[in-house]
Amino acid sequence: MCEKPIQPLYWETPYEIVLALKENHPDADLENLGLRRLQAWVVALPEFVDDPALADDQTLAEILREWYEEIT
Image 1 (tube, rainbow, N blue to C red):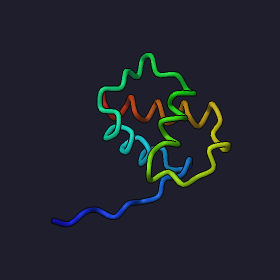
Image 2 (cartoon, helix red, strand yellow):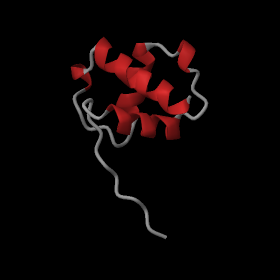
Image 3 (cartoon, rainbow, N blue to C red):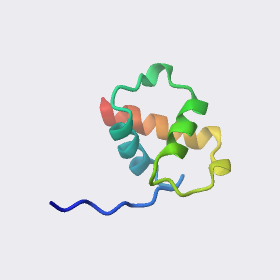
Image 4 (tube, rainbow, N blue to C red):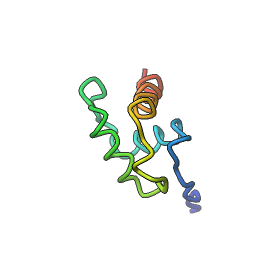
């Protein structure tokens, strides 16, 4: 069995972040997920290598929007 190589995640790759979040938090309630909790979840992803301080509300809202679109 071949494991897929781990791709590093950066704030500029919201779709890839969403895919990792879906895998790690499949039952997430996106309607009630706050931006600070989302940021903590992203930073906790093992593949995430970017500077946590670079996230702003716009970036986090984009990730949340992508995630919502991915599951609907």
